[in-house]
Length: 210
Image 1 (spheres, one colour):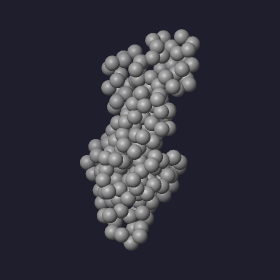
Image 2 (tube, one colour):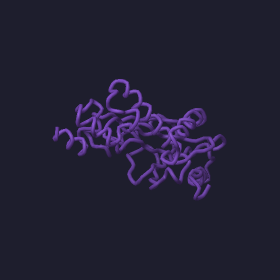
Image 3 (cartoon, one colour):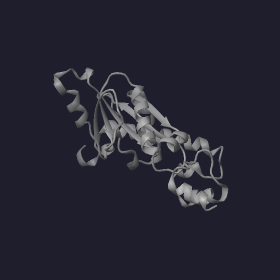
Image 4 (cartoon, helix red, strand yellow):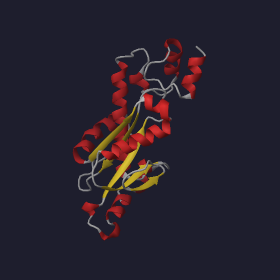
């Protein structure tokens, strides 16, 4: 796909590594969603794509519409090996967002057996029981990471939509916990919910000013 989007080049190179049959060289993409929001969990996904059944339209989740991500979620689940890790707000506030993210990544990978190489989006990776390659902007380069970004994003968005029913005045279904003007106004007016990351500076500042 080249510059038009992610491709499978990195995965194929790894699968051919060391002269081993590709079936023994499972390559997994790992990405997260939700590091920046003021509320809700951070979600990580690990995905091993089947080279013979890669869903059409995979791309960095940020470059897809919500409808496109939802449409790809089912085909990825149906054709790939998938693991999902969810770090809740308590863990985020206790350990910090980076450590919570790395923990969620490890939990996601733990659900898939036999991975030889994990391709991790970004420049930080948790200790994993396999070889690891970090790739900055990996969701725009690797189809496996792109698929993981979609699974993580859709999973997290669905969680926030579900929470909207419990906290209807905060607009979680609309902004998914990100720091929009609407969210800021609701937080100032109503105070925090159990979903809010009180360790985050913007949240702490708004609460201190109430």
